[in-house]
Length: 440
Ligand code: S3P
Image (cartoon, rainbow, N blue to C red; front, side, top):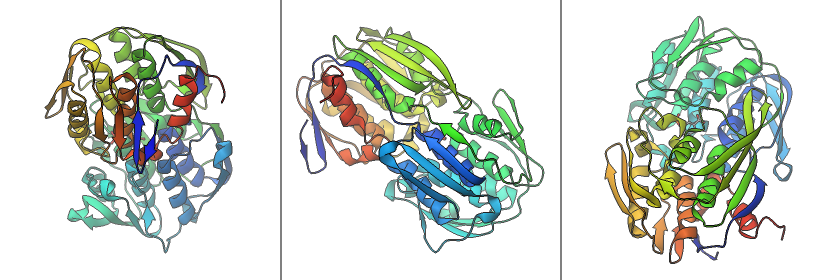
C-alpha cells in the first residue's frame, strides 16, 4: 500500500487470517455521548473509535455545556453531563463536519434547549436534506431556519417549549426517528414515531437502558415528555458492524482467508448485510453472544468462499443501508445478477452512493447499471486496476479498498482521507490480517 497525497493504493494480498476487534460502533457512540450529556454526573464510555464523526458530536456537546474528556488511544471517553437545564448557547458555530447523525440528532436535542444554536457542516453535509427533520421539529414548536427554507445547513435552531407529535416517516430513518424521540423527552405530551420499515433502534434500547419508559410495537416507538435529567452510565460500546463488514467481505473474497471479528455489535436492526451474504452462500458463523448495555454483540467468523446472488429490496435496506457499497463489491464476484432496489436513500448519503459506486465499479471494469433506487450488478467479473474517486465518502473509499484486494491491477482510491470519518484504524487492521494476524 502506497500513499501519495490523498491517494491510497491497494493490490492483492495473500489470504487474510486472524482474529481482531473493530473500533466502537459509531451510531451507538453518538447516542451514548448525547445521553451522557443529558445526564447530571459522570459517564464513562469505553471501546469508542477515533472517527471524526464521533469527535464532532463530542466537540459540539462540549460547546453547549457538557465536559467531554478522554484519551482516544485508550478508546475511552468521560462525559460530565450538564443535564437538559445545563445546555447553554455557544459563541461557536456548531460544526458537525461530515456527520449527518451529529447534525440531525443535535437538532432534536437543541430544539428542546433554551437559546439559539447555529449548526453547520462540510460541503457534503450542506448538500443533504434536512427538511425531513426540520418539518416535524417545527410541528413540535421549534423555531428552525436555514438555507433553502431550512432544508439545508447551516441551520439555526431556537429551542423552545415543545409539544409532542405523532409523526409517520415516509422513509425509514434512524436519524429522524432518534431526533424526534430525543426532542420528545422534554416535550409536553407524547411523541410517537412510526416507520415504514425498521431502522436501527439504538436510541430506543439506550433510553430503556437508562430507565426512560419507552413504548415499542413493531415499527412504532413512543416516549412521554417532561423528563428531567437522565442517569449517568458506564457503558462499553460494541465494535461497529458497519466497519467490520469491510473485513468480512474482504475475507469472503480473498481466497484462503479465515478471519474472526470479536466483540462486534449484532443488533438485528444492523445485521442485514450478514444475512444477505449468508443468502449468497458466504461461509459465516456468528457466536459468543454477549449483552452490552442492551446491545447484543458477539463474534463473526468468515472464511473465503464462492458467492451466488441474493435480492436486496426496500424491506431489508434500512438494516444494511451503510453496507450497500461493500455489498456491491461482493456482488461483482457473485455468479448471476444482483439487483439492489428500494435504496433511493443512497442518493442522499455522504455522496450519491448509487452514482459514486457505479462510477468506481465501471472504472474497474465491472458490469453494473444504476437504477433510480439502486443498482444491478452482473458477476462474476475479474476487476482490473484503476483510479477510483471516493467523492469524500468514507464508505465508498473503504469499499474500493476491498476491491483493490481482488483486482488484477492496482486500485488507487483518491480522497482516501474520507475514511477518517468512521474507520481511521482500517489500514492497520488490514495490515494485521494481511500478515496472518501476527503483530509487527
Ligand atoms: C444512522 C442512520 C442511517 C445511517 C447513518 C447512521 C444513525 O441514516 O445511514 O450512517 O446513526 O442513526 P438514516 O437515518 O438517514 O437512514
